[in-house]
Length: 383
Image: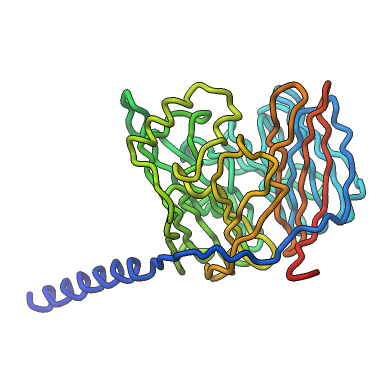
C-alpha cells in the first residue's frame, strides 16, 4: 500500500512540474520599435495570361518548380508549371469528379522529390500524385471537422501533413462557439494517423465569412512547427512530433478592445462586403499571419488598410528561436485601387527556398484583372 502511495505521489509531482515548466516556458516579450534593414528585391516578373480563368493560386513544391493553379468550380482544374527562373515548363489537368484521382475543390499541399499531395475538402480525401500529376493513391480522413483553408503543409521527409479543422460546439444569439484543432496527420500504407498538437476555443466564431480574424495561423520551417495565436499574440514553437519547444507572448502596448467592444465591432461589420472582413484595427486583433521570411520568422500585425492601403505594413521579425530581431516594412502587402470603385487584396504569397519568395500580384483594370508572377530575393543590410 505504501509503495502504491509513493508511486502516486511521484506521478502527481511530475505532473505539477510539467505544468509549471510550461508556464515558465512562456516568455513575455516587450517589443521595441527598432527597424532593421530587410527588403525584397524584385528579380524577375512575368505576366500570366489568365483573362478567362479564375484568380490563380500559387504553390511551391519542395524542388525547383512553381505550380500555378486555376480553380473553376464545377470544372477541371488547370495547373501551370514553371521553373525557378519563371520559365514555363508544362500544363496539367486535374479532372473534376469523385472518382480516383478526381477532385472537387482541391488545394496543393506541397510535394517531395517524386510526388505531389493535394487535399480535396468536399470529398475529405488526400490524393497523392507523381510529378506529372499521375494519380498514385488516396487517403480518406475521418471527420475531423471543417477545413480551415490556410497554414496547411505536406512535409514529405516525415511523410506527414500539418492541417487544421474547426467544429461548432454551441450556438447562442451572440454567436457560435467553435473549437479549432491543428493536427499532424501521418500517411501510413492504407490510412492516416491523426495526432492533435494544438487547440483553441473561440466564443464568437459565427461563420466563415464573418470571422473577425483567423484565430490561429501556422507554418512549418526548418524542421519546426510555428503556431500563432492571433488574438493573444502568442507564438508556439514545436518539433515535428508536436512537442512544445518554446512559447512566447508579445506585450501589447496600446489600448486593447474589451470583449464587449469586440462584440459590438463584429456586429457592426457583420453582413458587410466580404472584403471588409480584413479591414479592422490592431486594437481588436493584434496579429494576422506567420510565415518564414529569409532566415527568420515574420508576423504580420493588424492594421486598418482601408485608410492607408498604399502604405507598407509593419511586420515583426524573429529568429528561428523566437528571439525578437526588429521590425520591418513590407510594401508589397497592400491594396491596389480599383477603377470600378472596389479594391483587390493584391498579393498571394508563398515562401520557398530560404531567401527566395514568389508572389502573384493582382491589378484591377477597367474590364478585367491582370496577374503577374514575381520572384523576389530577400536582402539584408545595405545590399
